[in-house]
Each structure stands twice: as structure tokens, then as C-alpha cells.
Amino acid sequence: MGASWALYKKIQDLFGQTQGFFTFNNNYTGVDFADFLLGYAQSYNELAVQDHGLWNNVSWAAYVQDNWRATKRLTLNLGLRWDGVPHTYEANNRMGNFYPSLYNPADAAVILPDGSISPASPGLGTSPNPILAGQQFYLNGIGIPGKNGVPKGLVDNHWAAFGPRLGFAYDVTGQGKTVIRGGFGTMYERIQGNDMYNAGPNIPFSTSVTFNNGVLLANPSTSISTGNTLTAPITVADITGLDRKQYKLPVVYQYSIGVQQGFGAKSVLSVSYVGNQSRHQNDYRETNLPDQSLLPSIAAGTAPSYNTLVPYLGFHSIRQSETVQNGHYNSLQAEFRSQVMRDVSIQAAYTYSKAYDPATGSNNVQDLNNVSNPYSATYDNGPSNLDRRNIAFVNFIYDIPFLKNSSNRLLKTTVGGWQVSGVVSFASGNPINITEGGITNCAAIPTPSSCTGSLIGTANITNVLPNTSNRPNVNGSVSTPHTVDSWFDASAFSPTAAGEFGNMPHNSVYGPGRQNWNIALFKSFVFSESRGSRLELRAETFNTFNHTQFKDVSNTFTNSNFGAVTTAHDPREIQLGVKVVF
Image (tube, rainbow, N blue to C red):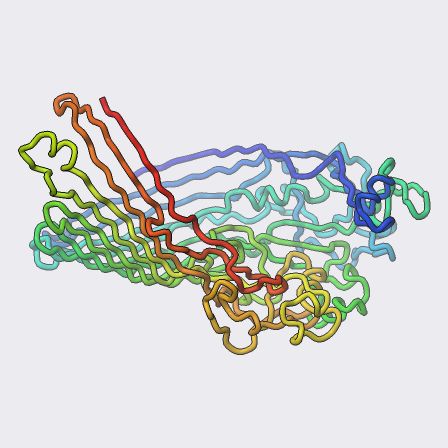
């Protein structure tokens, strides 16, 4: 049994540029660099405060565990763990977060024609940050830790995190040749802190100013078109925060059962079922959403201003971290180990598996990804980015017996005693997440014959909806020629209509698999057995047979090479080494 307590502290600056930055877009001369030389900028942005946070978290834990030999054939592993993992917090309560329960519709912001908030609008307040003293912010719905019932870590803590452990091993015959093993465990974890760091720049402790529509490089507060001095408006803020109602502790349930069978004295075959269920995993979701029926008209530019159509007037984007995603993994795993003969040892394994989750990041595990379609809880459900249905490998070591025991010392030393080893691996491909890309006209897509209209596709949906992405439509099944120019048939896809999400299932096309051989040849020349001094020579080859192994495939619908292979794994590499031990 045992217990622990740990305190973690981190100081991190917020990201931003207090020195400001300009954007030039050829609006004045037709050449953006010429605009720069003339001192005509399209826009200017500056972070008001280079603030930092003092983020802490405390972890408690306790466990009890025991191994019990219930009978001569049955051994049980029993345990229970408790994790006390309250959420990360900012030591000085310098955090702002949006809470729907604190938003009063009667104090909805008054939006001016230029998109800013009227100084006469209700719901205004100032910042507790003395650097921003007097600066007006729209604070309807904004909560600060320690006030109005807002928790120190912005979300509620969950203390009932008890994780049982159960394992067993059963000797079927009592001879140690056939053993059945199984286990189950529950594991909890917190979101470590990125959700809080990303919320650091929220109002009212930090803000930035942006001037659009032309400013002077010499003085960014001067409008090019009017010559007037620009003043920072009360902006419609973007919030990156945490959803208090959807923030349970992430938990994973792991389980396995399998059998091990011995053959002879030096061979073992293992076959197991291994799986897990993950619950309350993390993502980001846009929550300040207009009615979905309005998206086509918003995309077409016929609807009123976007900021007047959202439910929480006074805010443009409210992107909230939540722990609502689920996933699972199931696999059949087989392994064989054997000392085949005196000079040859071998290990081989095969896994047939399926991993399923809604993660939208690249081909690795990431937290805090945006969901593609915030209107749908299932739009991103599909095979995991890590899903490889078939994985196999064989490795071996062969002590070449030729002249190994020769009575001729010279032959034994120089020709005998060499070893060959190798690792051969096979794996099917990872899923490819097909995205639509930016479409503004029919000429932008690979198959213009399938395109109608002048303003269509994800350029509209992602411009209309912040923190979203889109996939194209798929027409029927997708054929897979698996050639360099056409790994899958690009003509099976078509653009979406304005303001709509595509029907292409998430991660439903798979990329190239891999077959790889690595072989090494090595030998030791012994100088003195008593002192252990020796010279080692090693020659290693990676991708020994120089087999082309395709890697990445263009997955953006609007790309001219959509569906084509774009990269490959490394060609053959040869590595030589000499090592002296004395």
C-alpha cells in the first residue's frame, strides 16, 4: 500500500506580440511589397499585455494491492487506487471564462454597424488588471475564479476517482505448460494544463487591438482613407475557455485475457484478446453557434451580420474545452518465441486490431483538437488516426556455426563466430482524413465538371463558422487503384453546397502500408577473455532490399494532386561500426 502528494507549478507567458504586426495584401499598388515600401498596411494588430500565469495543480493518490495465491494453480492480483486530481488553477485567479449561466439576455450587447460594441451597451465592465485600467470590456457571462460561484480551476473537481485492479493467472494442468491470464483496470487522469494556458489571453485580463481597412506604417492609429486617428473599439471578443458542465475526469478501462502454451523447453505461444474503452476524452467545440438553417444564407452573404445571429450577443467565438469524447480499441494478439535450435532464436508476433475514436488531429495522439462539425456529436466518429488493422513482425538471431569451433585459432578468430540478426515488419496503412480545403469557385477543384455555383464549399463553412473544418461529399464507394498518381479515386468526391458539411465519413480511406527489412552482421574479436577486452565489428542495413515504401497521400480535395502519393519512407541505409572494449 502507499500514498503520495505532489505539487506542480508552471509559469508561462501568454503568446502574442506586444510590439505589434502589420499585414500587407497588395490592396493599394497590386503588389504587397510595394504597399510596404509606400507605408500602406491593410491591417495592424497589437497585444496589449504580455501577461503570464502562475499555474499550479496538486495531486493526491493512494493505493492498496496484493497478490494472493488462492490455490496451487490460481494466483490473483487485487488492487484499488484512488486519484485525487483537482483541476489546474491560476494562483492569482487571473483567468476569465465564459459561463452560460452567468449570461443575462437582458444585457445583450448592442452591435454597431462596424461590428464593434456600442459604448452605451449594457453588460460592460473594466479589467482587474491595472495595466488595462479604464479599458471597457463586454463581460456579460464572463466569470472570474472565486467570484459568483466560479471554481478556482474554472470547472468542478471530481473526487470519486476509484480505480480497481483485478488480474489472475491459472495453470490449467498444474505442469506450468498451459497458463490462462487475464486482467482489468480502471485508470483516471486530469487534463494537465493546456486547456488553462490557452484560456490565459481571455478578457478581462488581456486583450488586443486590431485596425483593419488601411493604416499607415508610420502610425498604425491613422486611417489611410480618412486621415483620422483611430481609437480602439469595444471589440466583440473571442473566448477560448472550459465547459463547466462537460468536464468529467478522463478515464480508461483496460482489459485482457489470453492463454500461453509451452512447447518443449524453449518455445512459447501466446494468444490474447486485449482492449480498452476510453471515456470523457478531451476536445474543443465551438458553442456560440447561429441556427444551422441560417448557414447557407450567411455563406452567400445575404444574411445579417454574423455577430448579430449568435445566441450570446457580444461574443464572436466561444470555443470551449470539454471532456465528452469516447473511443475504444480491440485486438487479437499472437506471439511466438523459440530457441529453434542451438544457434537460432526467433520471435514472431501478429496483431489484428481496430481502434475507433473522433480525434481530428494528425497521425498521432493529441488533445484539444477542434471538432469539425459542432452541430453534430457523431460527425468525427470513425477509425482512429492510429488504427492499423494488421501489424506483424519477425526478429531473429543466427549464430553462424561455420568454423565457430575450429581448432585452427586463426580461422576461428577471423572467419568463425559471426552473427546475423534481423527485424522484418509488416503493417497496413493508417486512415487518411479527407478534408475539403478552401473552395471559392469551380476552377479551384480537381474535377470542375462536378462543380456548380460560384461560391461553394468549405471556404464558406469555415469562414462562416470559427474553429471548424469540413470534408467533401463522396458519391458511392471510393475505388483504390493504389498507384502513385491515384492511391484512391479522386473523382468519387464532389464539393459541398454553401453552408453545408460534407458526407464523407471520417477516416474512411486508408493510406499505404509498409514492409520493411533491417538486417545486421556482427562479430566480436576477443583479445583477452579474463579481462573481457574485445573488438566488435558491425554492419547494419535499414530497408535492406531498398524497397520503395510509400508514406503520405495528398488528402485535401482542392489540391491539384489530390489522391496522389506525395512522400516515401527512407531508402536503404548502410551503417558500419567499430567498437573496442578494454
